[in-house]
Image 1: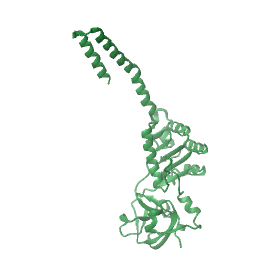
Image 2: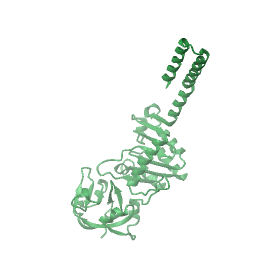
Image 3: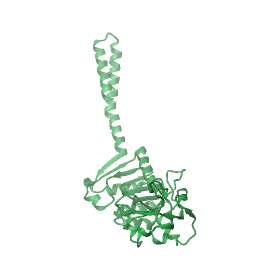
Length: 320
């Protein structure tokens, strides 16, 4: 743009020098073009730079060692909701900021990797859940929930930064904080997708999803209550419900990550339902290989990659 304006000024100058036309008008035109060029350089360029910088800031952890504080500013400035997805989370001050947001009446809802939530993150998880904050556990059979992101109605946060002390003061990490609405909505949709995969129900009247079931807690609290009973082929029609699912388990398979699947079809890839036992729960069962034949499994029916599943976490979920 700047080069085009300069070229026009130069062209006008050449016309002034060689043309027999009204030189006063040409000089006036040249001066106007030059004024536009100067205004663009002096005023417009700084404004463009300011606008860009006001939308995106990137923080390198070892410059100031306070990426956690920048993240907390975003949480504290939220007015409606805070959604987050985080792999490792051990920083108490970030947890306290989320609790403050919950106490202000905001929707605070997050997701962690399943194994991390029962290992490194367990103390933080207990603190958040005791404050009434819902934290889902992603259930990748052959992978991990490795996202580190947070989104509010005003901003998004993303990068390599795990919410830990070492990531804050020792590791080489980057944190990007932005207010660009298009990018913010993309992060919102990604985190919503993760939450919905874990059995939540979307609210079509709002960009805030709502929880239909609380997963493991609901299962433990309602083990003695009355729930509907469905054949395993009906399970996909009842995502989000707590129910007893009946059917014949014809095979048991354990993956490389030590996740066990109870298969109800000869071709498990085409089967619309399965029961999953994660490695951290496997020791609760005396012999998972014996979990075959006609069975009734109680739990929340969830959706994973377009198929229905129940997570078997306690032996008591097997209905006698």
